[in-house]
Image: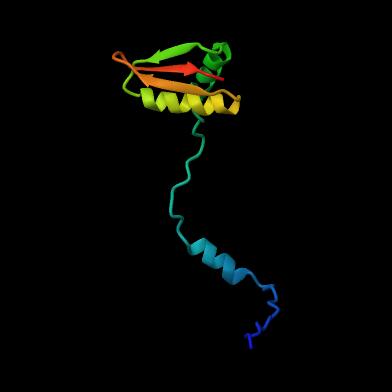
Length: 100
């Protein structure tokens, strides 16, 4: 026979002074910073503009040391727009073609 769970009704505490005192005495684990401006996100918009101009069969050559990170960002942005790509390593860098 399965053990039956006994349900009990918990009544809310009307006197919250103990809880409030606990909250007041507790230190926060992190510091809250005020008036820090949010930096702009330029890269995704750059990739979106690049992809808007790419047609089927067009390719780009990425020569930087962050080429794989850039390709991942381009593919992610393109996938949201229904695009597909293929990449090949070349002597000067990595070339990325739009296939769909």
